[in-house]
Length: 92
Length: 242
Image (cartoon, rainbow over all chains, first blue to last red; front, side):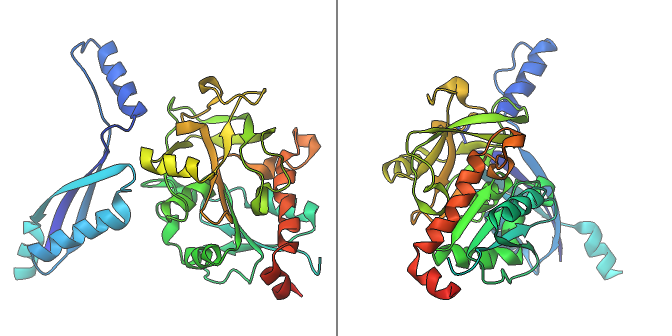
């Protein structure tokens, strides 16, 4: 089955994020005075094969652990769903 | 010395400092060999160098993809066996991603790419690369990076300090380690560290760019030249090289 995962990679709390600070400053200079904080991260969209949801979850976790996020300064979380369009292709 | 030191200089796609290291190798009479990242054969070197650059375009994170190149299996084994390894700039980043050295290099805190001569305080002067320096002296090496902010959690930093593994710190011209002298926001002003055994050095500055008076300084030559004396003093390596 084809799966789609949206992986969010974020800096761990407590680690200075100068990019986020700069973006926050940019927003405030545009008049958004209420912006307290911005933290910048990464969004990775993955399309991959796995036999079932459990295997897909394990695979994404392993991908994050081994490559997508560096545990020294990042955490990763994700949303996973079956790729319906690919399923339709297979059945046709 | 029985024969010239044999030094493997690893090249990833996007590496750019290998030629400068090869040039200094010529000055020092080393037998330098450029090793492409896809090869697992380092050629039985006496030392391995991971040069600066932008391996894999720094995509995802600096050094994140390079750490999985076939050559890194050989580099890890060489380092684990006590061989002399030097990772400069991107090379330091690759060593941290590979877990050979602790911590990580993040984007400079001011978000600028800094290219400048940088004074450094020498905290420790032993091992294959630093034994030609003097503890407490101030040296000058070029820096050229946008992602050089050293980070590790407090427990790791405290252990590095306690074990004397912080070997170079950013300093001002007088050798004072002050915040203004820190070019990238590195914690504890860390510019270079070694592994537990002391045979692997990771540093953000570029010793290969300070090897001739014409370019403005030779403190880098003092670092690289130390390898010769270190090798002579290593009994196992000396047997291998006869």
